[in-house]
Length: 422
Image (cartoon, rainbow, N blue to C red; front, side, top):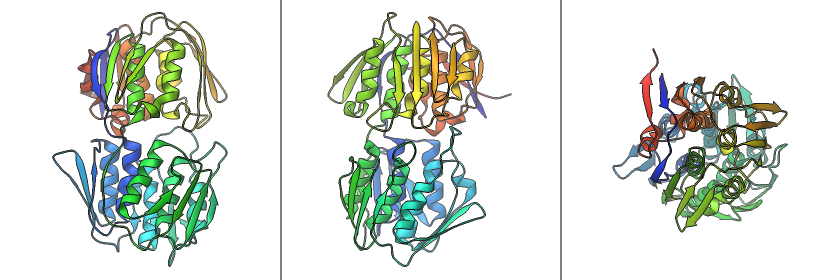
C-alpha cells in the first residue's frame, strides 16, 4: 500500500492537460458489451477503476485491449457469461452499469451488489426500479442482483429519488432501453455531461435516443447495436480539482483540453471566492492571490457544483479568512475528509448535511488518512498548500480517479513523493 509524502508551502504554476472522464468512460465501456462488433473508445485514462471495469468485462466474455494511442478496443466474444463477481464489483460502484446491458443483450444477469467509496448511503433501488419497469424479473440472492427477461419492453419510468435524479441509474436504464421493444421515456433523468456522452456513443452504435442532457429522455428500442468509435469527453472533476489546486496554493495554472461549459457552477463559485477564472476556448486560466474571501457552497446535481468537488472546495475554503458554509445535497454524509483536514489545523464543524468552516491563512503538515477518492484529492491539495510535511496514507483511493497525479502536480511545482508503507 502506498502513501504520499508532501513538502508543502509551494505555489503551483504552469500548464496541465485534462484527461478523459472516468465517469463517462465506465458506462461507455459497459455499453460496448451490447455491440455485435468491436468498439473503439478513445481518450480513456489509465486508472484503477478503468482496470477494474476491464476485468469485469473480461469476466463477461469481452476482450479488452489498450492500444498505444490511449484507446480501448472492446470486443464481445462469449455471450454465455453473465455474472459480474463480487471480488471485482465490490471495488467500484460504477460496475453496476453492466446490469442493464447484460439483461438487455443477453437476457439475464447476475451482478454483485457494488462497492466503491464510503461516502454515505448509496442504494441501487432506482436502478432496479428502472430495469424492473422494462419487464425484467429481479431477485436478490447471496448479495447478487439476478435479472431475467425474454425481451425487455419499453415503459415510462420516473427516476427521481430523495436527493434528486440518479446518474448511474439513468445510464443503466438508458442502456437497457436501447434494446427493449417499443418506446421508453425516462422522467427525472440525470442531466450530467457524462449522460450525454453515453447517449452519443449509443446512438453511434445504432440506438435511437433523444433528450439526453434534459430531465426527459426518450428511447426507441432497436433490434441490434453494433460496435462504434468514440472520443470520451474531458473529465470535469479532474479539471475542477486542478482549478482548486491553483487557488489553494495561490498559484497560476492554464488547463487545456477541458470543456468550460461543463464547469460553469464551479467557475462561478471560484469567482465568488476571488479566484480569477478566464476561459479561452478549450483552455482556461486560473489564478489566485492572497485576498480571497469566504463564501457558501451547495453541491447539487448538474448543472450545480458537483458533489465530487465538494471536498476539494472545502479544503480551499479552509485556507480563506472568514466563515464559509458548504452543504452537500447529493450525499449529505460525504464529509469524512473533515476530521483529517482538522488534523492539519483546519477549523471545520459538521452540522447535518453541511460543514461550517472558520478559514485560516495557513494549514500545517500532519499525518492523515484518505477515506475515499475525492477526500484523497482534498487532502493532497491541502498538503501542497500547508506549511511543513504531510504524510497521506492509503492513497490507493486517488489512483481510482486521477492518473499519476503526483507526477503531473510535481511538474507544476509540487513536492510529492510516493513511497510504500512500512
